[in-house]
Figure 1: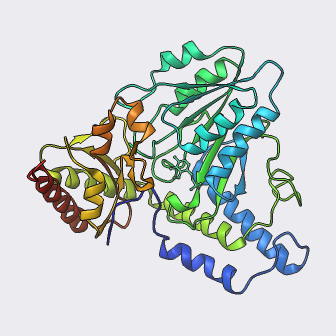
Figure 2 (figure 1 turned 135 degrees about the horizontal axis):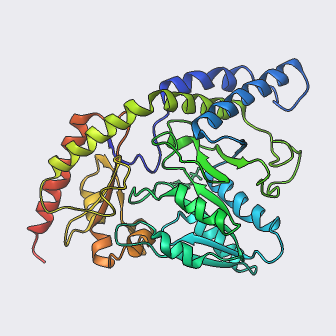
Figure 3 (figure 1 turned 180 degrees about the vertical axis):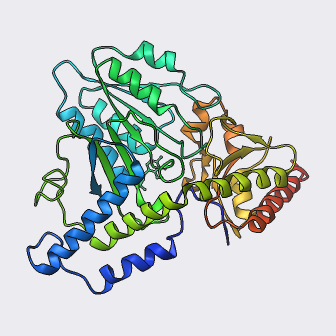
Length: 372
Ligand code: PLP
């Protein structure tokens, strides 16, 4: 398999697996129990917490571990609404957010919160003037992602946060796709991240909260994570997340240069006829969301079984529904159906990527030559 689905998940780094092993195999004590072994596990978790905080890189706040970024986002949105000052009953978000944000907002809108999902331009970027117009004294929170998971475009998180703050609102940033890949600018009050996108294990995420901007607890129980998020933490998962964060911090420039080089190679190998969806300038280079007129993406996936990549429409579900992100940038059903997402990263070999792009190109040519 040639793995080109780095936005969906990333392979666990060998260093991460190594760091997790003793906590999975030997040191099984409950990190919240007072025994010597429990205290050691607790100390390992705190070390991991600092490693994640350092990679987030914002001052004046701290991290609570969660089961996923999806949980962190649900908590941030629903817990902030619970703590909202009177009269602040509106949330602004973007039409291109991940389902974790959009579906949580939908849930809140069924309970009396007004949700405004702002449109983006054909390049996938938010026009800041649109945000400025939508902000007023009723807005509690602005939720905007850093790097889009489908088309890779980078929003101006610092400027979005500054506008939100000027209107007395707070800002939640879904930083899942930018975390460990590019720096996160100052500004957000809450940041959601996930371990499995940075070569860490699945099943663990985190919410960074600025001091004083903590949402109300969402998961109730034993009072772990300073009473904010109950549930016994897994030392192995936390240590793995921390190790992945430290490794990403150490390698960020090297990984970025590698990915940028891969992006150039892929674009050359793909040849003519392909259009890149989303801004070319404001984009993370490890994401190439591409389309070619008339192509049937689902058939490409079926034909190219040795390559793992994603599609622009939810054909796997049988609905063939075009992605909400591609729709938001103005693509119609046919254009979304002919879109493919190639994602590459730290462990992608240039030769594999070039070979995969050539195969994709050939399969697209073959489709073009098929009788209607
Ligand atoms: N937000 C974005 C932008 C994502 O890409 C993802 C994962 O695909 C998530 C949130 C959810 O992350 P998790 O898998 O940790 O729930």
